[in-house]
Structures are given as C-alpha cells and as structure tokens.
Length: 187
View 1 (cartoon, rainbow, N blue to C red):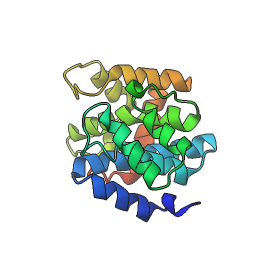
View 2: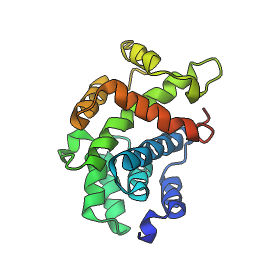
View 3: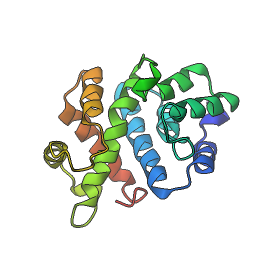
View 4: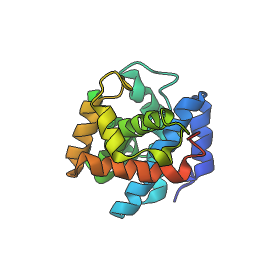
C-alpha cells in the first residue's frame, strides 16, 4: 500500500487541517467503524480506515457546503490520492451529487452521522463510556428530535437502506467498532 495510506502520514494530514479535539475524535470514530466494515465485507482495512480518517479533514477550514468536501477533494488530489478515493470522500455529502458506487462509499455514508450520534449517546451515560450504550437506547434517542439535533436521522436511515441492512444492525456495528477505541474518543 502506498505511503499515502500509512496511518502516521494520514494522521499528519488530518491534524494539519483539523485542530479541534472533537472533530479529530469524530474522524477516529469513523475510522474505527470503517475498518470494522472493511473486515466485515472483505475490504482493505487500511484503505477504508484512511477514508474514515480523512472524510471530514477539511471541515474545520471549510465548513460551508459545497466547500466541504470539494476543497478537501482538491487537496487530496494535489497530494496524490486517486480519483476513486476522492470520489468516495465526496460521496458522503449528498449535495455533491457523487454517487455511492461501492461498499466503501456506502459504509462511509452509513456510519458518518451514526458515529457522531452514538458518541453523543455515550456523553449522557453516567460514566460517559461508549461500552455502556445499547442499540435500544440509540434507537430511543433517535426519536427525540432535540437530542443531537444536527444529526440527520434521514441520512442514518438512508445509509442503512443503501447497505440493505436494518438500521439496528448498523447501530450495533458502530457501537461494537467504537468500544475498542473508546479511550481515544474520550469515551
């Protein structure tokens, strides 16, 4: 695998553009969920993990649509990432019009919002541990529109539908992927 996918180089790029701990933790969470999805589907965990780490790397500098993720796509191309990788990143933002053409892109879309939501669910646990969050409580909180209100419930549902699996199964996948990296997430 190319040096572009070595975790140390990927983290350097992420940290160059993403300074806030909250956004970095989101990237780590999506990385973990993507690595687990790669293992589940026979994908390359290094490649999928890099997609997870870099999907929002430009968000702090370019938070407005369509700058995010279009500006990030330009930076990735300049750094030598190929078109398939860049298209996968672009496909996580529906307004780009880039189709989710493969499992990696579909999983990225499915876990992105859900990672943030599951992390928010952990933050309201008495011990603030992701390991204590259950699928049932995530499902219940998804019904509360005022809880983590910026998280798109529609994207979560669409992501599961695109994968052809039940939403609860995607929730269980994300929770299981986040538990081993809970300390890195502050959870």
